Length: 77
Image (tube, rainbow, N blue to C red):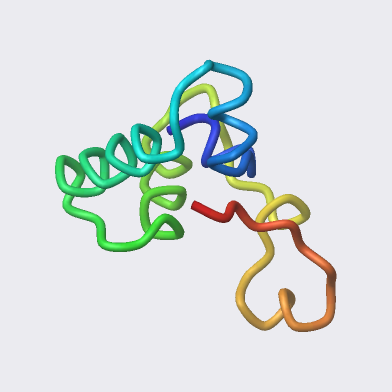
């Protein structure tokens, strides 16, 4: 989950951990099911809201209206 929160793509995660892309997608699907979220954006929000060591900062994760004006690298998983 931390990789998704930090903006890492599935391909980057696979290369770093030596797993297949299908394994990564399966793991993401399982995490979404266990947390009751449907989208990765919901998962990121949940992690940031409930993790004591992480804080939501607008300059890292802009609100939807700000995304249209800024280039933002979102995880592709």
